[in-house]
Each structure stands twice: as C-alpha cells, then as structure tokens.
Length: 118
Image 1 (cartoon, one colour):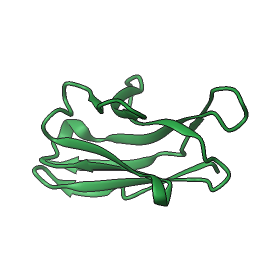
Image 2 (image 1 turned 90 degrees about the horizontal axis):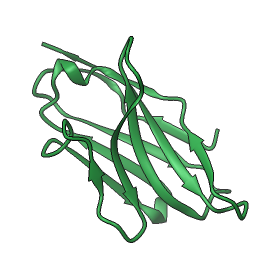
Image 3 (image 1 turned 180 degrees about the horizontal axis):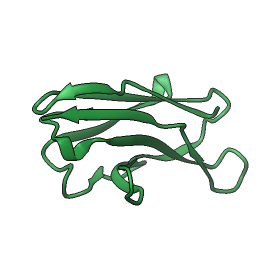
C-alpha cells in the first residue's frame, strides 16, 4: 500500500485522537496530502488538506478542533483531532497527490475507524 493510516480508535466525546498517514518510500514528490472521512450511509467528505506552499484548509466542522500537519522528513501526515463529538464517528482516509510518475497521481489509504461515544 502506498499510504498507511493508523491511530484510529474509540474515544468518549470531548476526547482526542491523532491519526497518522505514512507514505510509501517510493513516493517522494508529494504535493498535497488530505484527510477525508466517510460515515455510514453518507458520502466521503473532505476534513482537511495541506498543499505545498499553501495554508491548510479545513471543513467547517473541523475548524478550531482538527489540525493537519506534515513531517516531510518522515513522509508522514497527521490529523490531530480534539474535542471529538459523536458526529465525528467515521472511517478516516488519507489522500495524497504525487508527481512521481511525471503526472499527477492520486492515492488513497485503506482507512482507519474513529468511533466517538457520547
């Protein structure tokens, strides 16, 4: 797998989790990394994105609670999630854009489950 997420789990409302997404070593020209989520019965939606040379962007529900970051030396992206709510329960997916092939290629991780109980 090109992207591998970790860090999901079960927490109570108000708790915190940090998700990590490790990018395969063969992908060295990552231009953007993002986090998406998909709740049961709902469409996948953007949570946050971080593109080279630009400020991070967040969905309205994530502003003030979630923080996306990248450690390029470790080829890893993170999603720090604070003050979690039951509505944040979903499978969270890492997404990356790469120029390694000379074309813009997109990659998805396998997803990690986040469950928030009230």
